[in-house]
Image 1 (cartoon, helix red, strand yellow):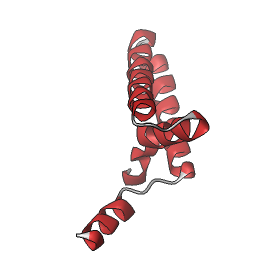
Image 2 (image 1 turned 135 degrees about the vertical axis):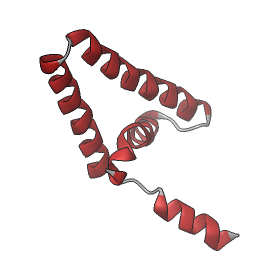
Image 3 (image 1 turned 90 degrees about the vertical axis):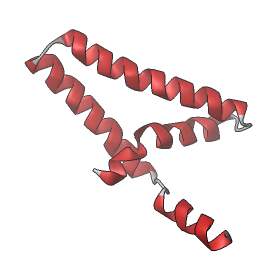
Length: 85
């Protein structure tokens, strides 16, 4: 059981540069959407990621992390999906 949990943690481990890449992808997608489609759509996508970040931050704070550690964990959760892109 311990080995299985360690393997799962290793698969889902996210480093900070990967989260930066995810944020960059979101920003580029929002900019492209604003130019080629509509600024409202870009605002909806940016708002959805902001809502995801705030909801994850609330959960992280509720679970006991405080300060910068909570923000960093939430940032990695919100934008760490770039690891699989």
